Image 1 (tube, rainbow, N blue to C red):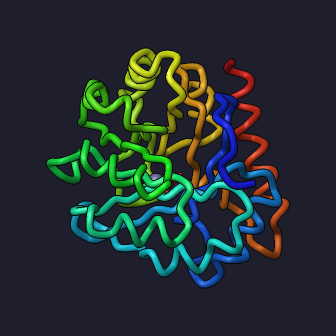
Image 2: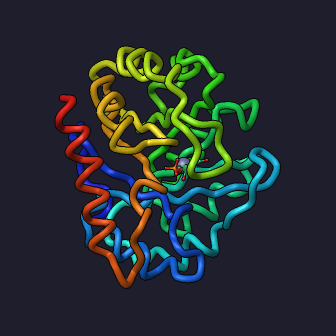
Length: 232
Ligand code: DX5
Ligand code: ZN
């Protein structure tokens, strides 16, 4: 079901950046049927990040194929002019980068006013304290554990203490702590142990599978979940 109530259980967000771009509808349905909790949608503009993916029309097209949470990660600058379009496309969560514009507080207010949960993403070089002044405006923090722009990169280990620091800053607030980039069964345990509750994974979910062999997605998702559970 779409985003319901807050909880801090481990959630696997499957990034369709690693799916078959000619078949997004069936790919979304397949990963959900195989146990993905959220579908993570990476929007890139070739300006804020050195890659281009897709926009609001694509999000709207896949929305009917997603039963649960559509988690939209905007790697675009500026973002403000497009927030309404992504909300109308059916995003449950809209995440913008702290580095993408000068008026983070205002952009977050716009997202919530559109009736969507608001997230802030932090690049690896951005200090965790960047979220301190917007804690009352956010529902999610997305910590990038790679430099955004591409799937299949290696997890940046120096970000691990930052997960713990973000968990400390968040405290008891109902704010998800998501990690994004290089999450595999080898790195998921440390992320969970440091306090992350949403694990974004592209390569580690889609590797080896297809809509014709969706059981591979299921095994990949279970491996991530088990690695996280074993570390808690
Ligand atoms: C990177 C994206 C990630 C990406 C993760 O810029 O934000 O969501 O899909 O891919 P993997 O899991 O392959 O590192
Ligand atoms: Zn992402």
